[in-house]
Image (cartoon, rainbow, N blue to C red):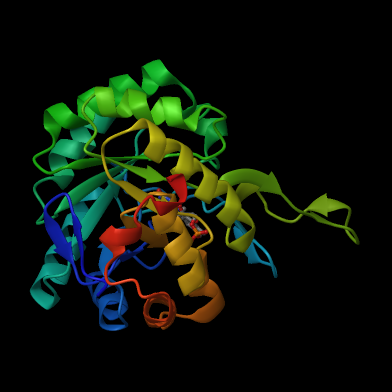
Length: 302
Ligand SMILES: Cc1cc2nc3c(=O)[nH]c(=O)nc-3n(C[C@H](O)[C@H](O)[C@H](O)COP(=O)(O)O)c2cc1C
């Protein structure tokens, strides 16, 4: 009932682990698959290892989660080893994720990660937490998105997914630009920039002061981004942002998503959340007489 085809690859269900959440070791990724997740996105990796920002880097509150991890990662060489380990444990689809500071570095990290046994490559051009180092995310600029997309496509041997920010007011136009530069799919999207202040100390709580907001509060923002992008492009979309329930998941599909990224919900509800979401989807589908996800994809547009 939930089996999904994404760029000709079969997923047992449309949920995928969003980048940055547990997708670091092969064993950890396999555990998430065992818990009912349909596919994995690895934590974004760069050419060189990065330590990221000092603590505190994340905090969860009732309606939202905020993080400024700062793209800490073990670097592309280590990531390739972990992906190989995952492949010895599971045949589930795996999406690698990369980020870099320049188009040339994007080309190089793409070339290297594509030596790993991956199914797709996601390109993170939308992290809001590293602007002091890298400037504004590329995902705000149509020319930058086109340059990066072309560079990655020249160097990739798997389909390329461009990860955008729903914070860009013209996210649909940006998605169109990525499509015309050769993107095979869009992920919409990343966290959006925010902050929290501790009233007693009168200071921002995160060491980085600002961070990326995710979790339930992001859901309607991500949903609208997916809805707008679906109207504009002909390539599939991974809807990501605040999905916590089966109802959220089905709404995202009705907006036009093919796959569903799930991140913060894992912090709130544990790895069992994938099964919880897919069970809830099936209950609603049975109640509503929906036979397949294909039947309702983009249904909110008619
Ligand atoms: C702690 C944390 C780390 C993240 N790291 C990455 C990352 O490395 N690369 C990336 O593309 N997105 C990263 N994200 C963003 C998520 O992949 C996702 O797009 C976002 O959190 C919205 O989904 P959610 O509300 O389900 O968490 C991170 C999110 C969190 C909470």
